[in-house]
View 1 (tube, rainbow, N blue to C red):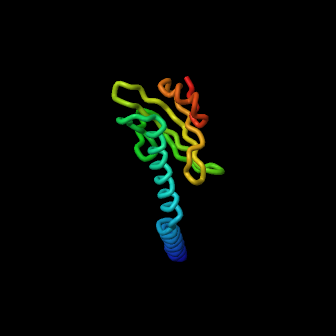
View 2 (view 1 turned 180 degrees about the vertical axis):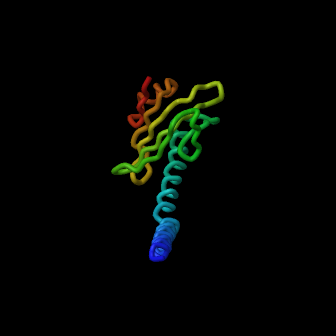
View 3 (view 1 turned 90 degrees about the vertical axis):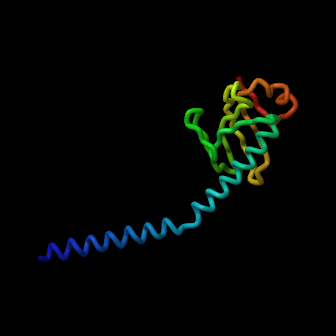
Length: 133
């Protein structure tokens, strides 16, 4: 009889602990604030990438639009600023070009590293642009 009461009490305590943990986890605003901040960073990185690549029909794979067939992408808070990786291509006939973009805390472009021969001429005049083979 004591074992039944003990098991019931133990189950009740574990259930309350799990419910309390779940409630705190669900109502914690920090993950939602962080996600909103990451989404803002990726949106700004898209516009910066479009400006740097200077293409009318740019297709982008990034943390907001992932495509595992193309490759892994991420957005990461660094000290000080952000790093965003992804892929882009100008058209369906063009291959995917990987890129890594570093941004300041104010979301200004520090560096864009890409594998795109078409940007080599622009990279000669823009120190923020780093083109690799």
